[in-house]
Length: 472
Image 1 (cartoon, one colour):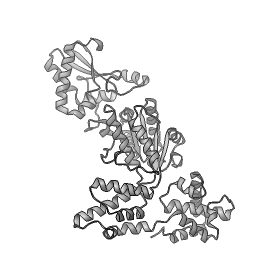
Image 2: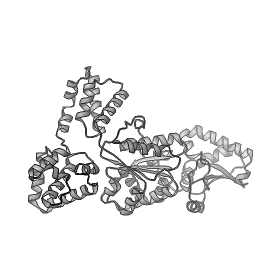
Image 3: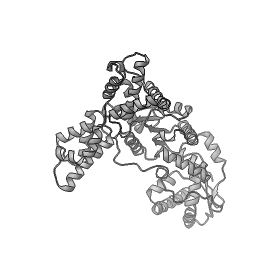
Image 4: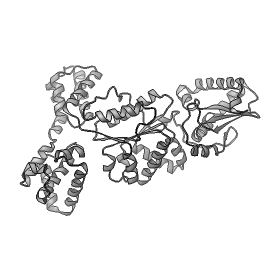
């Protein structure tokens, strides 16, 4: 009896099996594993159940097949065996290319009587939980404060989260620590699965991706690893710079990337630098990462920091005096994470000791943090100090002059700006007469090389660093 000729009685029996299984394993596990299943055929006492992938077939065979057989036999004693076969994706099944369908359909069947291969124990039912990190419910688009430094990255993230098919692939977010990259990635994943409940979004760090790959190699389960990661609808990987220089992991990410793009699945990645600026990344991977949309998050402005503080205070249910809000927005300019941490400390202190939030108590509670921020210098201060030291004009820092007497101090100032400020490479370049970020990269690398080869030069740079407060 073929799939097109399944009788109403058989369909009713399968519905009863499914109903009992839902009660036994819960909605989440049922939706992950049973929704994509369907009755394929009934042949000589054997019920054939079809699933879209070999990975699902193996998992069901190892975890649910005996329960299915026992339940079905209780409704129909003519059912002696149950087999799980790989067939074309149906209903909630994943999208398969013709090549992968052919490869999977050629695999042997999983049956109740055949010995089963051992999979990793205690894997959670949902693929997203099984492969990735939990999504933080606080990190939504509604809780992301938008301003000029991050509006482009925010708009691109919203577009990806709401699109049924990838509008650009991949979306690559980059910027300094604490500027909102991880927040946006969590928001994308949560919005995507809310809009498309039958789809899977997996979020994890590049470090976790690497460790999972290493474990798969060690346990000789690379086939399972590949099938798992290449069957998701959206893959989000944070801190891609972590795999720079790790050739095997880069190769696996490259092939996973290609497979997902070929299947029309969405990829979102983040790093602290743009793909072109990550040293130790293979050129073919850089090319792939640059192929989609690259969006950066700049350092926060005073206005954006004010907005973040007011939004966070509203979430915490507290009223901040305007003087305190303005003070924190002025003093803590490094990143959003530090700013929110400062506010949490102020609020917690007020609630624990029973004192109102004032400018004086805020200064007292945050004295260590404020002292650290006071030591941070601006690019303008660095340019002025370096110009004085080398007896050149500050305007030379922005000029097009290439004489060594000017170019070398300018490179040192760029190098110190990268070390002592939280500004991105493009931002530093703009402060030096609108230069490209690659010029800043070259300057940083050149100064590092000269420090290694020229002791006097290294002492000059170190002296300037100390003068600017770069050493405690």
